[in-house]
Image (cartoon, rainbow, N blue to C red; front, side, top):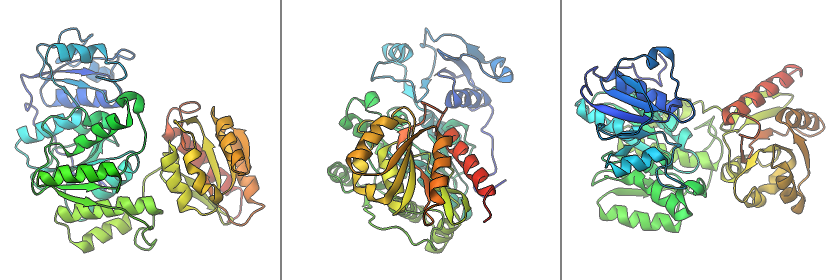
Amino acid sequence: MTPSSPSPTAWPATLLAGQRYAVCGLGRNGAAVVQALLDMGAAVQAWDDNKPELPAPLASHPRLTLAPLTDLTSVEALILSPGIPHHLPKPHPTALLAQKQHVPILSDAELLWQVARKAGSQARFVSITGTNGKSTTTALLTHILTQAGIPACCGGNFGTASLALPSLGNDGVYVIEMSSYMLERLQNYHACASALLNLTPDHLDRHGSMQGYLDAKEHVFDNMTKGDLAILGENAPWAETLCQQLEARGVTVQTLAITQAVPEVEAPFLPGQHNAQNIETCRAIARHLGLPEEKISQGIKSFSGLDHRLQLVAQAGGISFINDSKATNAEASFHALRAFPASLWIAGGTAKEGGIASLAPLFGHVRRAFLIGQDAPMLADTLAAHGVPFEISETLEQATRAAWAFAQTQEALPILLSPACASFDQFRNFEERGTIFATLARHLCAEEPC
């Protein structure tokens, strides 16, 4: 068992006995929720419009019914997978049915909080949200806690589904990464500390507008009271208004506006100004949870970072390959370009609204760009307008090889994959994109004497 994982303790097998739940959506999250509910003794009816199948041992469970959800009157709640809308752009029929029959629509994070309290645990909950940086902050805080001997585990939008997390005692801490979709479906969930790291346009089709997106994110502070800690990662107008509202409820508010990176000696695997914000957020929450400064600093220094987030994956001949495949929008790539004053930049895929225009202040950090994916021509137009050298490589392999060849003629410039675009035009997800890049990088470096 690694230090970052508490010894798993099963929930009582009869905790939800006699209760019935409906689950809509059987992807990674939904299947895990079904398994967890059954393990706690509940009866479950589940369905997925596209893939109603579950692994054989689970599908044959006597308390599981795989059938369309046409009547919800007998269930405690509907657990709707995060990607399935209950409001905008168009409510799923099952969500409409739940609303008509007055059945709560919950996220599994809400259900985790409920079962923890039902089991008698007073474990503390911490919530992390924001457009970017959620996963790194969630993982770093969990690492700091476990290294200090605190039983802690993390999940939610990152890693393990919330309800699949183990039972923790009164001294435990759940660190939950919250997407805007999850936050819309909270009810009684109460975190003793929550952070809203940043806010840039994302998922606007789901929330209708930037205000709708902010409204969803603000739910991270629901039910917080005197003695709780709220962290706001920006000094934007929305943060000022939210600060006033929270302080009126007696919540302690801390606003973090970080202007420089943390020295490498203190956080060797967390480069860049944006990671400084993640670090200081974790430091503030860890203090709130009672950890001494020495333990916090030790945890930060020993954290090795997350895959696909400014991850050094290979190095040879003075040339570093940096995998930042998680950068699926321009805001995320802004932080990457700022962290490297001169780089060979691999970008492209399916662009978000606005493309890479917002990155113009950092185009001076790009010695040459190698563009991939369906929106490469659009990105090329933006770069050309600003005089940035580029070539359209089309595929990631072509771009990586071209960047490597170009790097041989330059001083030791890092090759930075930070796409600023979604990956779905050429890959299953950003993880696959990053893994392929890392494999290519290691192969190229193996051919070059270090």
